[in-house]
Image (cartoon, rainbow, N blue to C red; front, side, top):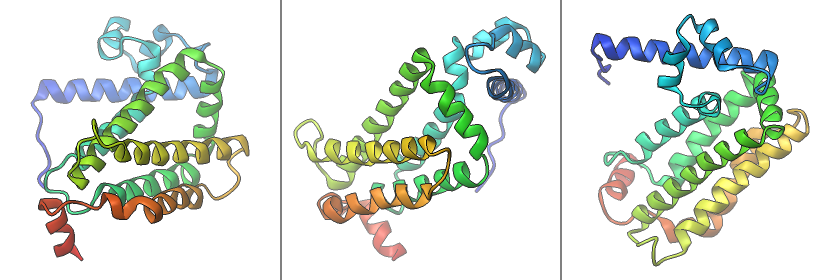
Length: 217
């Protein structure tokens, strides 16, 4: 895959944004969301506070930036007209990679942020909007696979809610248990159960995705 070459101005913006996200993650982890100010984050990233506000209008936007970027990455993959697998299979691969990263590489930091969010209503509301975006995206892509209209057929929405709700329930239980237990096994169990019961009803229609899936197999 050819690496995208951005203009110098865009590269600088991306570096600044990444520095702000890193600074926010460090300070939120050290001091908590409520006690951390936007001024402190700007100082940590060595930028003017107005630069911070241009990138992130609110502290909630900054705190959820890594999750928003992950969502955008998933959207880019699932909306790719050339993707070679159906939405359920792609979601399984995506969730497995995320669960392994959380439980094996950044467990303590993730647990600390999760508990902080549980104590912060404004952050919980912002996160809820992101969850709705996942449900909407899964609904649209499952409907596209099946060749149906999600405004008329309830099944894609129901399956999307089961996938996302089951994933969230497994994560919530893992956080409540202080990161003990098999997070990867639990989230994959949810997906496999949903796929076993409903997957055949949402198989990709006989279009490019289905053809590519057959070729890959």
